[in-house]
Length: 374
Image (cartoon, rainbow, N blue to C red; front, side, top):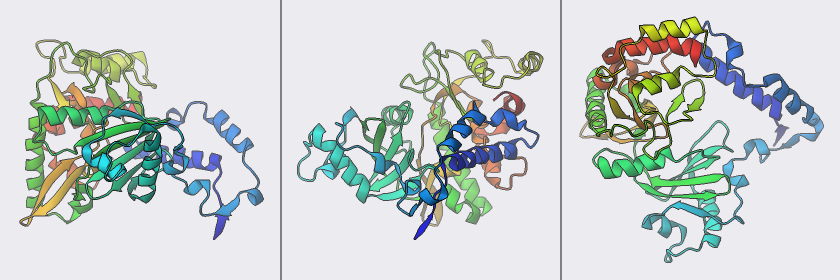
């Protein structure tokens, strides 16, 4: 069946509109011009200039609009093994012969991707997909992956907190601009899919289980003098309206606050200075503790399963924004998607150690800061 493909300009506008809708949900009085991409008009104009006529863009459902990242994977380019592949992945790639050559590896990776089940894909599937390979392996396929925070975190937790339920890192390969991250599959439901059917006692049980996991993570010792952020030296990240990365090493909570105040829309000097004066003491000996942080803790990233009529947490996934951060920051990140008219009571069952109630001053300050600075 044929249809008219959306132009590049149309897809660009749809992406911008989605971003604006999310921002307005968080701040209904937001100045929308602060959320438009840089050089928006110019970029849109160039896209419109290159659009073909409607007669030229009527194509079948195998169009570029339907393509995903696999269709642009070039198997003729030799694969680079960034982190060694596990025995299970090697067996998956080359049954009976785990010595697959780098030349053949790219083609075998493409073969695996083509035959694997798609379990998640980004709004633009040409950028990121998650595939289930066999019974026990998940493959994240990501274009233009900037760093390997998630992978280094999984390695770190396997060494320092082996009892924390996380996927096991199973290898990382790069082919041109596409990275392929293998890890074990957490077979379960996502908490987001079952939360609405849980009763109050079941929700309280999830809260208690999650608290134990987070307290364990937050007890990992931080070595003073080492940079905050990713354990592999990836630096700090602030992802709310958009992703920002620290350019210089951040060595203290004070440095981290400076980073948060230097967003692309910083606000007026008087406003910023007043917020800084309202902040709790941040210098020693009152400086917030630095603790290990997940950075994207929400029901979509918590895997659960039913055991003996009880929902049990069996995995935490998506560690791209993890690392060592000030103790209040997990509470800020947990509620990043909390809208003024929120009706999901998940936010009322956050463990005490990451609840806004525990860091009310910091949390309220950040809500104000976010509306004008991020």
